[in-house]
Structure formats: C-alpha cells, structure tokens
Image (tube, rainbow, N blue to C red; front, side, top):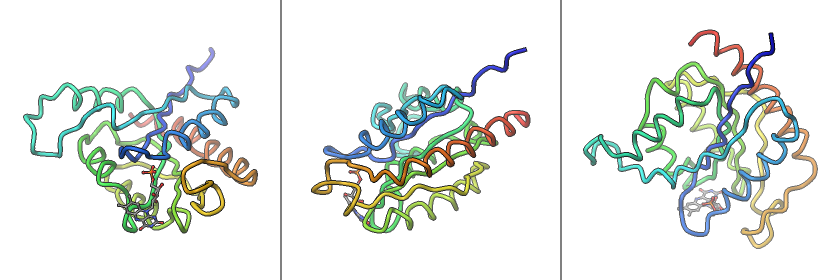
Amino acid sequence: MAQEKLNIGIILGSTRQGRVSPQVGEWVKGIADKRGDANYEIVDISEYKLPFLGEGSGEEPGLQAWNQKLASVDGFVFIVQEYNHSITGALKNALDSARDVWYNKAAGIVSYGSTGGARAAEHLRGICGELKIADVRTHPTLSLFTDFENFSEFKPAELHLQNVNTMLDEVVSWSGALKTLR
Ligand SMILES: Cc1cc2nc3c(=O)[nH]c(=O)nc-3n(C[C@H](O)[C@H](O)[C@H](O)COP(=O)(O)O)c2cc1C
C-alpha cells in the first residue's frame, strides 16, 4: 500500500516589515518541491496575528488556527534570522503559543545573519528539546554578507543546495519515524 506523503511546514520566523524571510522560505520550498518526497508549505507566523502569550483571551481565531496548522504537519523547517544573538520575539511567542502539537515531530533549521544566524539557531535547539521537537543535525547557514545583496536581495551561493537537501533528507526520515509515536 502506498504511504501517504508527510506534510512539512516551512515556518518563517520573522514578521517585520521589509523582512527577507519570505525569499529564504520560498527558496527552500523550491528545492523541497523538486524532491517530491513530502508536501511542503510555507507557514507564515505573521498571518496568524498571534497575541502575546497570556495577553489575549485565549480564544483568538488566529491562535486556534495556529494550533490547527501545527497539528496538520508532521515536521518543520524553521527559517531563522538572528536578532540580538537569538531568535525573534515573534518566533519565541509562536513557539510558546502551542504545546503538544509540537511534540514528537522533527525539524530542520535554515538560518541567516552576520555569522550565519548560528547563535539564534543554537538557542532554538534548546527550545526544541523542551517542546519534544527532534532537531536534525544538518543546518544550512546563510551569510548576510555573501548570500544577500545589500542585505536585502537573497542570492544564495550554490554550495548551500547540497546542505538543504541533506537537511531535508533528515527531516523527512525523522518525521516519518516520529509519526509512529503519535
Ligand atoms: C532587532 C534586530 C537585531 C539584530 N541582531 C542581529 C544579531 O545579533 N546578529 C546578526 O547577525 N544579525 C542581527 N540582525 C540583523 C538581521 O539578522 C537581519 O536584519 C536579517 O535580515 C533579519 O531577518 P528578517 O529580514 O527576516 O527580519 C538584527 C536585526 C534586527 C532587526
């Protein structure tokens, strides 16, 4: 019997006006879609208008939609940008705004910043542990200096392609394995 394809959400971690994360997310999705091994979709935190945790009624449609979206996917690719050596407040709030729908799923990280967003990505790995998200090892790191023109136009170096595919190999295989636990 043919196995159903897994659903993988590519989560854009930034929400500010003028952000570059949609360019990076679309690039990852373009590579991913060519593989045909899973259903990949962009998940844009900004569309959910999430309240800061605890400040709303808890009944906001966006909050419910956010939880439903996370529940519908089997794994994640986080598009992570470095803000003050960590992840964005928007991504942290989005992580905090759900609980068990994160559990027992795999995630890859694609990060960017002046040092490839490495410090933000390492912070995210710590959070993943608490949310029972299995973050894979392979981690494409993009440089604001060499993979972007004027820090705004995304022009990724060719060498990242192999890394993105290896990361996706790991996300898909671990997502499949972890599905058996849910
Ligand atoms: C509030 C803020 C803090 C930042 N701090 C860092 C930093 O600590 N390290 C770094 O490499 N880049 C830092 N940057 C640069 C961002 O990584 C860069 O602007 C990137 O494009 C942000 O992603 P976005 O365009 O998707 O929002 C910072 C940017 C902002 C807006």
